[in-house]
Length: 261
Image (cartoon, rainbow, N blue to C red; front, side, top):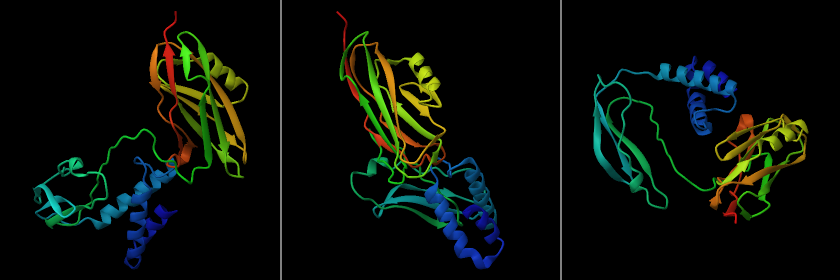
């Protein structure tokens, strides 16, 4: 709705304030280059392209630099009216010690231009979204198991709302050294416990078409201990397929596989 309204507003200068607020809103809700569903993403991109075309101005020479907490990082990057492509500023991750920081882009001369900051980070367990309508529980039956034996991971997905929700999805992290039994997953599909599944690396992806209000689904996953060692699974998460910006995360389970006699 925001994207469609912005496209109309940009044809009337009196709506400039609403357009600017709409663009800021789209920048805030973008997740991994997506704006929710496929249709929402297409409409948002159309509005952004129209905005860029209307705001395009003649190029002018200048320079731009990164400042952290009031201090310049590296030398300013110069450009002129013949510069093409993106301007890549130096990496400043080493200057961001724990705590709050103010990151600025300062430009001398030039003309208005869009900017993007890419942030890559690692964390054992991302924070859960309070807006996620699903709750996930993952429990490993045995934290210590002998090579060649089998164990189970119990997966419980709960619809926390009182409304039916579409396309629930759960991605369950599996510790290394354990192998998933595909025959058991196929049987779960036949029994109607899940609609479909995938196995990608150390993760099992479970799909449902819908979950009724406050419905609780329990799915056991059978695993075989294949390689001795101590392993920790990647974190598991549950979300609705078309609103994957709202996830409920749970800590990855850990297992110790001891060699067979």
